[in-house]
Length: 294
Image 1 (cartoon, rainbow, N blue to C red):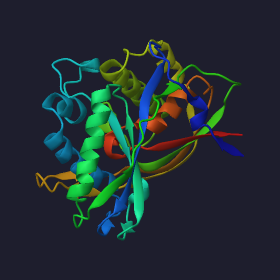
Image 2 (image 1 turned 120 degrees about the vertical axis):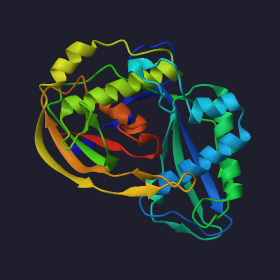
Image 3 (image 1 turned 60 degrees about the horizontal axis):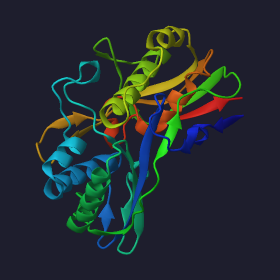
């Protein structure tokens, strides 16, 4: 049997820890004022595009740039363009149509702990509902938004040894290794990308980079092996309505089972369920689900 392990890592927010990741779990619930339609596989892109336009129009410039166009001369791991401090969760809207009076929602995981950022995001989504979502410009009223307490994912392993886990790719995942798009999902590559993403989010928007033995854990990650693999390549693209550019939104889908000494890695994999991993995870790519195999 398998049991979901994601929420076992949640706890009350405690600042100034060096092996955790904090975020605000924001949910935006709307009531459709017109028919609202989300195209298959593109709901996250629709929400992201409209959000960016409304944030630019309604937020102070410095807040807009911090949230949607973060850049820096020198960033963690040599990054010039910093990762955005949010992740959209809207895949349940793919291909759905909502008639007038129907309600729908999507989630935003916000890793920027500034109050100004949360206020700006709410204002932007309220304005997006009034302006209408991209496909058909269907308008919607923001019904419910609550200011939640932040959640902290503890990255220190607890519990008994774990020898096998399954990772499901709920949305296409695209990783690069040695400058090339990975066609497999070796554990060492997956863990390295998750570790770097968590540490970078903490460095830019939280209390600082992770304090962990990077090299030692990387060596142990090399020892984890694939037990079973059911992956396939999904080839999809989207065209930007603003620039006309075509963007690849495909990637690996399916599931993979890993075997080995996995206990110390599990909290990082659980955190990736909330922060995503890989290219374009901001608008929903690279969403995974982790279960322990019993």
